[in-house]
Image (cartoon, rainbow, N blue to C red; front, side, top):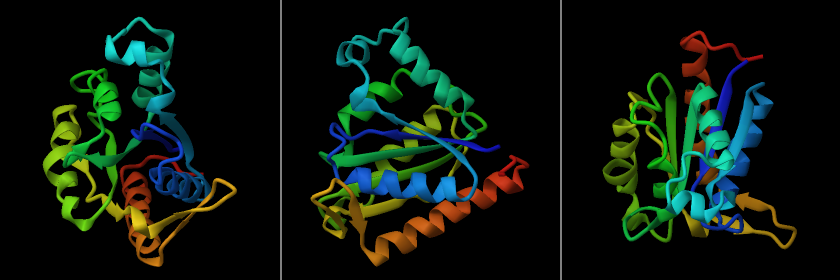
Amino acid sequence: MSHVVIIAGAPSKRSRLTGLTDYSSNKLREAGITVEVIHVADLPAEDLVQAKFDSSFIRDALAVVEAADAVIVATPVYKASYSGVLKLFLDLIPQEGLRGKLSLPLVIGGSIAHLLAIDYALKPVLAALGGRHILGGVYAVDQGIDRLDDGKYVLSADITTRLDRSLEELILTLEKNGITIS
């Protein structure tokens, strides 16, 4: 069975980024894919900042990444780049830690002005980690995601259309590469 890990790089689960990651997780599970989510902000801050490779929390999270067939890297845009929280975690992934894995970037920002953060900030670091098959990704403006009182999120039709297309590409590429989807 295919195994996808979502690395959520928002400093809070209340971020609208959670709308993108929840939607993606649900769609992939509907397709019969096993999905695990790493909320980087849930990892001990001291372990991340001090790069404690011997931390059981860090070892467990890195083992999830290592076992995955595909990695969705999700982040809000801060200062025209990915979040510092995400950077701390990506720095712990071994140099070739994404080799052989399909990667899909998901980015959310306050305006369309940060659209190129995917191409100029996130994709280069994924490539530096050995990622060679990096899908186009999805950039969403946070006004297109409504946070409801019950903690759930509603995505605009435009965002769901683009996200569905990217997730379908991910699923088809996994199948094409002979990775079983049940």
